[in-house]
Amino acid sequence: KLPAEALAAHGAAVAATLEHTDGKVRKAAVETLGKLPAEALAAHGAAVAATLEHTDGKVRKAAVQTLGKLPAEALAAHGAAVAARLEDANEYVRMAAVQTLGKLPAEALAAHGAAVVAKLEHPDEDVRKAAVAVLGKLPAE
Image (cartoon, rainbow, N blue to C red; front, side):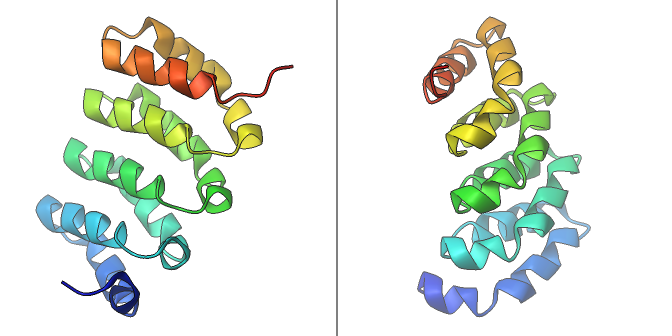
């Protein structure tokens, strides 16, 4: 294994594989980028966010989780894209989206509060619990 700092030197090469035709390669690329130091990962945030539309739910889940490792300000730039995954067909992607939104700064999270509130009625108990936890991070008015 390479130390995270050494891996960062290869971030561009790894990011190039995000467009590979094989979903397993894309998923591995997203997960590998998620091991970069947060500042190095930020340089690839847009490329990772683009994989949120991949047909494979495992790739989308990995992308949401990797975006959650971005510095808060960089994550905020992708908040709307992550919030859109709250309606994903894959339950694991939806759960990851709720958890990742919880990492947003309070001001950025507030913009997606209504979408998180809607998850309080989700059929999956874990999604509901995660939504409650995230809503608890919103500032009181």
